[in-house]
Length: 278
Image (cartoon, helix red, strand yellow):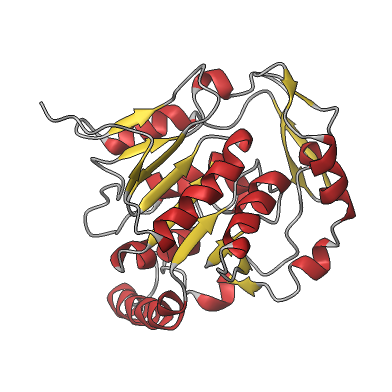
């Protein structure tokens, strides 16, 4: 299984608990980051006293704080791959020979897919605030998602990384690959209205709120024949509509890993919603 982690602030629990589930099931996990730089945990995910403003309570246990703080992250990610090395990036329209450049891009992308996708049964995009910076609108991440999607393989995304599934589109038609599907993600109720931050140049860069509303993006992306499940007031919200597995926030980390394992070992195709048969 290939796991992509932000270099600007992943949420430690959203990495560790799904990986625990996968490795306990005998599923090997390999890591990649957007440029190959060291992935960095979000400071809030290392602090059990930190109160999540929308929920009004801490979301990191003392045990998880101790585990995350004691983890040698450089060693943990020592064999990480770089998406910048693995995948090409599409050329600009202003390229001197745009058609030839696009032909070369598609050839290189297919070669990358042929080299990467057969090696893995699934893709996991780890959540946190950092993905908004270096994953959500990263064309290499989009192409990685499209490669796994073309192969019909499981694609799991947590928290703000779910946005990658709405943004990953072929240039030919630019239609969302999650159109008509069931998904979950941050609702307006889960979003900060002040104090939201990402790591930039080693220090927090504070916004009044996240730069976009994930709920609105997902509602638009699934279209009239899909459905966004916010599940506000319910403790857990994880939706499997194969090949997409979406997880709302940090509290769902363990369940996300559990459903990933069931999808990979038991061929589970749906979880967390009921089909409309009317």
